[in-house]
Image (cartoon, rainbow, N blue to C red):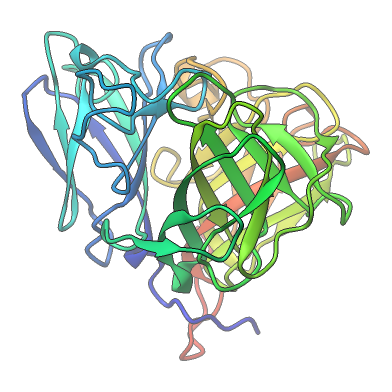
Length: 366
């Protein structure tokens, strides 16, 4: 049996769904077993098309000036956009603070489309890092400022590239399985690098459906990652490492049939994001809050401003679906985004509960 050091994943990751009420500000409270003060928050308006996936974090600051010196909330960027961190506009709502067990959504104007629009459905995926406390790191050739939760295998770090391929410290203390970089002060894609595909380094863009390609970076070490930005821009990066019973970053091959591939995680996932690395397909996201029962067919897309779609939401096509199980997930349809035959898929999953706790207590299916 697989044991874990994290018996309650909700102490480190939670999903919150809520309906906007248009108030400004609005404090939103998580409902997991543990209190969670989130340091990385990813929100999405589920109801309206044309609304951004919004990332914000406590390293930059939820209500700080952005790095361009403008008046919008700092640190807010969109996974479906190449925009710098001055998007979205404050008039569409933003996160102004993290709380002991949740966060504050500031409507910012009359719209509140991305955070708290009246009558609209929202989701917030939230990770604990280190409560906003950062430290300096000099492990690489370029100094970084790091915020780390080594127990949960996540770090956020900022640095300024020097225009050459160089190294910077990530602070995890062990080798990350994938790292996502984003320029803060200028436009640019969400570059994800990983050695999970073939042992060498490959890259994808979280904001694009493109297939993976190889990249001339060294494999990350327990202390540093390589990065190359010829423009010498200010960067933020997110590093993730597999933690048994809590998180899994890995790959699987699709079989192209309705009785799809089963993917072992070692826990019951709360969140699953999947990308076909061999075809131009979207980054599809499932979670147990939006779909508390199988089949999981309510999908959001990291690289798209589309509204939530799926059979349960619209009565339409039941494609790209999965079942979330006590030890992982299983593809339920023959499709390009999650189960194309002989294509390799990259996935990220975070736990709702470990398959077996540190006390030997097994989880249950749903």
